[in-house]
Structure formats: C-alpha cells, structure tokens
Image 1 (tube, rainbow, N blue to C red):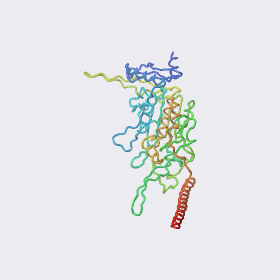
Image 2 (tube, one colour):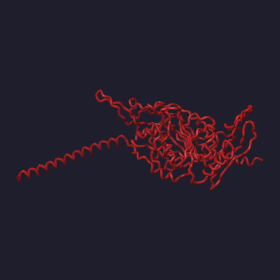
Image 3 (tube, helix red, strand yellow):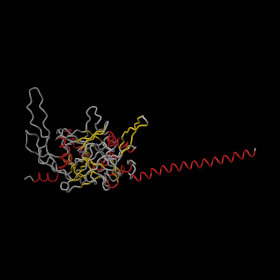
Image 4 (cartoon, rainbow, N blue to C red):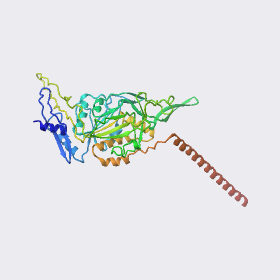
Amino acid sequence: DGALGRRLQEQYGFGPQIASLVDPKPFWFYMLLEGDGETVQVPLPVTLDRDSLERAIQAGIQRLAPGFLKTVAVFKPQAQGFDPGAKHYQSLTQVLEENVRLKDTDLKDGHVPADADLLLVLAPDQLDEKQLFAIDQFLMQGGSVVMATSPFDVTVGQGISASKHHSGLEDWLAYQGLSLEESMVLDPQNTALPVPVTRYIGSIPIQEIRMLSYPHFPDLRDEQLAADHPITAGLRQLTLNWASPIRVGVEKNRGRRVSELLYSSAESWISDNLNVVPDFRAWPQTGFAVSGKRGPRTLAVAVEGRFDSFFKGKDSPLTGEPAAEPEDGKEKEAPAPIAGVIERSPDSARLVLVGANTFASDAALNLVSQGLGTFYTQPTVFVQNAVDWSLEDRGLLAIRGRAQFARTLAPMERGDQLFWEYLNYGLALLGLFAVWLWRQRVRRADQRRYQAILAEV
C-alpha cells in the first residue's frame, strides 16, 4: 500500500531509485546505522562490489563511533600551471592536518568520498550539476558542509583587482533560505593594509611601506562575534577580507536552528564597486566613497536542522545514458551507477556559510599578517572551530579559543591615538631631562672630589 515508502520518505527523505534509463523500474536500497540516538546513512558506493561496500560500511561505523580520526573532504580551486593569482591554502591545510585527515576532491563524479565526515568547500567556481548534486546529497545524508563563497573574487598579485564571480551555488543556497548580496562590506573599524609608497628625499626616491586604513578588511570583535555559539565563543577577534553580506530567509529556515556568527560594525556600509584600491586623495577619511545606509551586516551563519534537497522531485544527474551495444572484440562498457535522490536530511545536518571568497587563503592571511605585524591565524582557527562543532568535538573548541588567539590590540579612536602618541613623546623627553639632571649632579660631585684632592696636595 506504499505506507513503508511514505514513512521512509517522511522520516529520512529516501525515495525510489533507478539503475539506468535502460531499466527505469524503481527500487529501494539504502543502509542506515543507528546508535546512542544518532543515525548515520551509509552512502552507496559507485560500484556495488564487495570491497566498495565494505569500505562504505566501515566509514559509516567510524563516523558513528567516537575516538576515530575524522576525515574532511576538501574542495578548493585547482591552480592551472603558474598562476600568480591562484588561491592556495597551505597554512589552513597544515593547521587542519593536526587533528583530522584531509582528502582532496573535485566532486566531478557526483559523489563526496564515502569516508568523509565533513565537506569543506572553498571558493567554488562555476560548479556543474554533478558537483552541486554531490554537495546537496552529502548534506541530505546528515553530513556537515562548511563553505566560503562570495559573488566577488579578488586577485592578489602585483596589485589587487576584483571581478564578479559565479560559484554555481546561488540557486542552491537560495533554495536553502540563504543568499549572498552582490556587494561588499566596508567598515571603518578595520585592519590596516600594507601599501608601498614612494617618497623623495631631495631627488632620491625611497620606497617604504605604510599602514593605511582599509575598510574592505572588517575587524570583528566583542559583540560582532556570536558569544553564545561554540564556533565564535572563544575567538575574540577575526578579520574578514572582501566579504559580502548574507541574507537569511525566515520562512525557509523555520524549524531550523540559525546562528548568525559574524557581524560588521554599526558604521559599516556596502558597495558593488569593483575598484578595491583606496583613493585617499578623493576620500581622505576612508579611501572609498560612503554610500547607502550604514548598519551591521551578517557575514557568516551556521544552520542546523532538516533540509530539503534542491533536487527533490527531479531526476538525478547521475542517471546514466543507455549503454552502447558492445562492438566485436571490445569489452562491454561499465554500467551506469545506481541513481537516486535523498529528498530530506535528518536533523543532524549542518551548514556553515562564510560570505568571503578569499577566506583563509594564504594571500589573505599574509596581507593581514603584514598589517598586524604578527603571524595571523584567526581564520584558520575559525575553520577549525567549525569542523570541531560539526563533528561534535566541543573539548577542542574550548581549548583552542584561548590557546591560539593572536594578541591584537583593540582599535582606538583618532583622539586616543594622538593622546598616547604625545604621551610617549613626553615621557621620552622627561626621561632625557632626568638623565641630563643626573649627569649634572654627577659632574658637580666629581668637581668637588677633584678640588678636595688638589687642596690636600
């Protein structure tokens, strides 16, 4: 009577599958592991041979059982040859490898690696339908997805240039109740940008580095970090780079737990101008034109709960074409993989979205490190915290928030800066005056001693 099928669809989001277009007869074939009130779906391998099934079941058991080293599948841009503007994530990779096992994936076969516990998506670019399907179905299986993306891409090379960016996630995010505005956030509370400046001493040019206010690097602190969420509770400070604001749809996210993790300051504004080089001659205070309404903008969110598949009611993009007839002397082509769509996720599914395409990249970390004069690691700590929260490792969250904080100073108003600057000058002059008085006293003492010696002679 279809009661079992309806129950499976309502409870787990499962639906009938087909093997290929040649054999469209639907069937049901799923595997679940349950323990301690938690349910983990065992993803079906591409080929249903014994070894593949055994690896998939073992990976599911490891995801369910505590104590195993977790696996994070990483999707990131692939550099083509020598590309000075390509994004690299060596610092992030080195930090994550201390606690988890990393596995690179391009998702082109429409699957996330079977042993992956979490999917990390960094700066996706023009994802095709199969790659989008892999992300969607991993979330539907109850997995956790952490992604950093934006409608803009900024290249750091000989200079800094921005361009419009199409990730391929726009429609998928909108279906899940999240959207990225096609603008960038500028904030007067920011981290300085090191800029090379040429000045002349007489006719001799001298190149020097000056630290200039750069509103495209919002400096987030205190109330701008969600104090009640494990990812940001112990972070205390974070600098984002060329970030876009995130809109959260109320209706789509009804019934889910939505946490807005990062905010810009109340004086921030937005701009869709692709010129990201400051012009202090035209705008001496900010380097950029201030337009529109000022106010805080959401820059990162974490969503937990039940999601509906973007491919619900659609055919799976993995459904293969009819196999060609084998020619004489040639082997028969491999059959198409079993294709089905999980239409709904369990309540354990988690999605973390950061609205910055260069988040945690080596180029962005190096720029902020130069601006602060110290090796800056806060974005990598944020990603670590997101991984630990998604994998329920709350102990590491509490330790890392205090142990790896870059001791950046709190920003000051211009008047406060001048006060401390002149106070330093005054203390230095006072110290010099004290040394002069001491030398005068010593000199007079020496004169009296010499006169006493001469009088005795």
